[in-house]
Length: 336
Image (cartoon, rainbow, N blue to C red; front, top):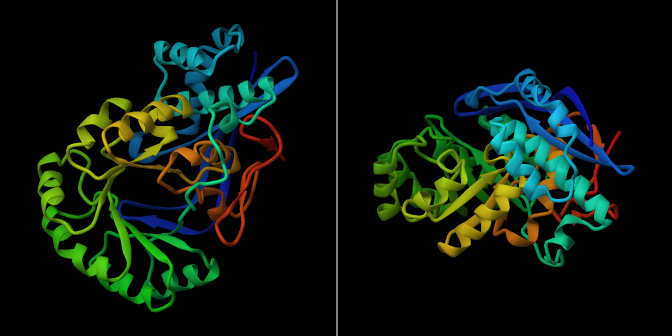
């Protein structure tokens, strides 16, 4: 295979703030894998929380470039196992795995969801994320993009007030994500008011390793709790099954589509709800997520909508949240 790497710094439409950080641009790496005249594309974003940069991913991948280019793409699963054995970070593995899956689908001349035997006639609608800001600006951002489901980032001293004010301006479904900022007591206290305000679930209210606190919340909250930072790897799913109602799988954190598909099956076997989320990826990463849609209960794939510029074509969404799947095989991606 021929390997290509390119880093991008993509400006966001608005400053994006969660409980622990703010940013105005998204750094991301796009990987291309070419074989037999077909090109597959994958993506992974940088992430200060996990110590990942575009430069670090490029260094990792270039260190094994000869081995990658000598690999014959006959199976994304075999390629993923090879990457894990080489000791790459999950973020770097994700970019390569997404490219490998896209390439495999293009070599088979079929979309990935079709290769996996799933039907796109039914799928969950993505939420649209409202980052932390002044209440006035959060309302303005919501009005800017009328949408059927909003994820509201929280972790301030006035979280219930924020949701109360936003509710005055829409009948949409709400989900809230505290990104590890709450205590168990705060979560249990906030949940009834949030439920009254039409919140569907709370995502990762406590610090990722606060398992004792999460057990307390699990037995005392009136809203479902979805794991995010507590569920990174395949090995985390079983433990989350004892403390959460569902999990949010991020492709960049788990290492791509290949492990994500195994995590979905494992979670469903445990009776957990399954969500896949994004990390403000471009259409390259979002198109890969979309291939999983028929297998999911919830999805957060609005990353490309938050960007001021686009670098690829592929899956897109209509104003009502419905998905436009491209006619191209694989993940349907082409770079601009």
